[in-house]
Length: 314
Ligand SMILES: NC(=O)c1ccc[n+]([C@@H]2O[C@H](COP(=O)([O-])OP(=O)(O)OC[C@H]3O[C@@H](n4cnc5c(N)ncnc54)[C@H](OP(=O)(O)O)[C@@H]3O)[C@@H](O)[C@H]2O)c1
Image (cartoon, helix red, strand yellow):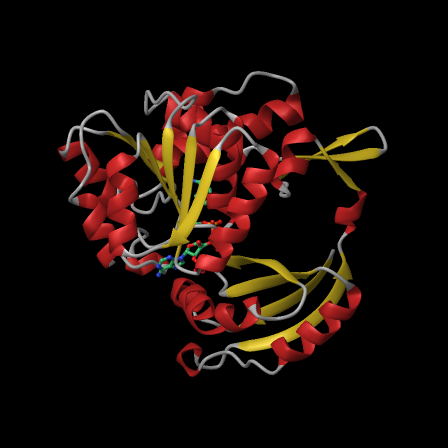
């Protein structure tokens, strides 16, 4: 795995969220089309207005082609005199990481532990989704019919986690249907007993599958507040689902800015169990803590600390 690391300086601190939104709206659709692109992450320091953009590619060759294309994309005018001051290329040692069985099946690692000379990778998002649904949400995953909205990293962890935990059916809907279809094929191949389907994220499919679901996992950024780069819950498919929530189902919204999204508020009003993305954030972090330290994580302390830090409104 190879990474391009670009350093941005000079943005005003308050522009950090704007920069993220502009990046995702303007550049990400183009970047996703680049040959060998596998993912990206952005790290920013709001106090200094400095940010690092890391883009991952499969091979050295696709990195070099992608790097040239990325260099041609200049920071948007809205960011004033933001400067991209350095670009470096790194080979990331991901090929040295041996995934445990769950991470290998999901094909994604979010926790790395150093075991003597070896780097061992784990995925704690998938079990974190189950902890959140079954703990805070009181859901019963084995035999359940599940609807996953989104096929990015979060949707991937949810779809695999649910199928592996014995869900009878997992339907994945995504704005870009081809991503949902690819993920569905992978989940179906890994867990043959699960009925897996995929489709486009539109109002009619969302309502159709929400009506028959016992568990709904919202894994897109659409419910995130507009200030954080989301749609603030404004999407026809979200309105359609909100009108069809009912008692007896569990709804997990992976988003935690705001803590209680409009989808979750509607779920509570309809008598459904509503689980905030904060619960997932804490549970996946707790699983990582336990892998690193070998000690039980103080989940309640972590939950209180995170709850106090994250604003009610996004
Ligand atoms: N609570 C937690 O610990 C936790 C863990 C993981 C993720 N999350 C949250 O879950 C959300 C998704 O994260 P991710 O890691 O999966 O991101 P990602 O890999 O970038 O995927 C983003 C997903 O959102 C969809 N999407 C983006 N904008 C959309 C829009 N306007 N309308 C409909 N769909 C849209 C994308 O669809 P396309 O494929 O069509 O682009 C894709 O399915 C984020 O808000 C993240 O903060 C929370």
